[in-house]
Length: 210
Image 1 (tube, rainbow, N blue to C red):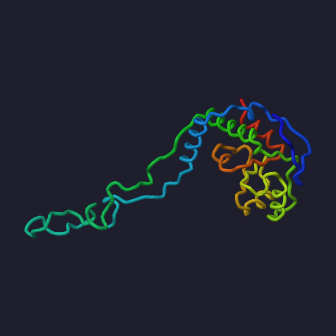
Image 2 (image 1 turned 135 degrees about the horizontal axis):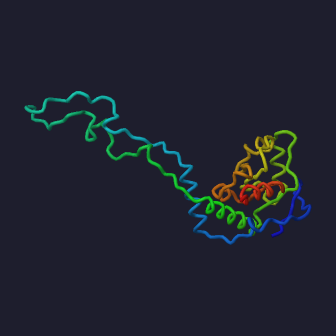
Image 3 (image 1 turned 90 degrees about the vertical axis):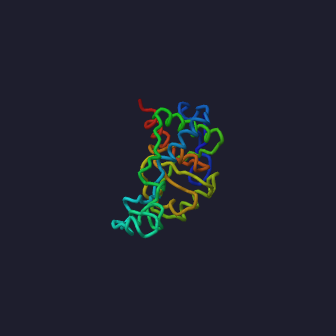
């Protein structure tokens, strides 16, 4: 599959051939969904945590004697039926939500998403992407000239480019990621994919490595 190459002025300066092993894969929605759900579960942070009657402070003394008061018998004021007592079936931070997906399935789903982006012309390849110094205004001007404008875009870098990362981080709906760290969830979270031509080589080396 051939795609256009753009310069930082947003003009077409040529074409490049995308490797069909990555960018020409028929999509399987069920597989992509399974991988995305697993990645969302693996990123989930469990913060809700309630205490059981064993963890609640106090309650060591019997509230009143067993017999003779006319009241129901109780052994602790931290019983779950008491106000301020432990929680019986509350959420616990020990709960594990992680899901394991085979590496080949994750890789296949990634290729499917990249292929779909390419088929829908949502993939923009740049001939060169360098900034002399970090400046948000400069980055915004570059993005405005590209076909994606300032719409939701993921910038895929071949390596850590500090100037680009710092310039893009304050622009809404724009995010950067290294090519070696690509995953389905991040790709599907943005409409456009923008990357220098060099990133294609990194993707091929990382995900087609035997």
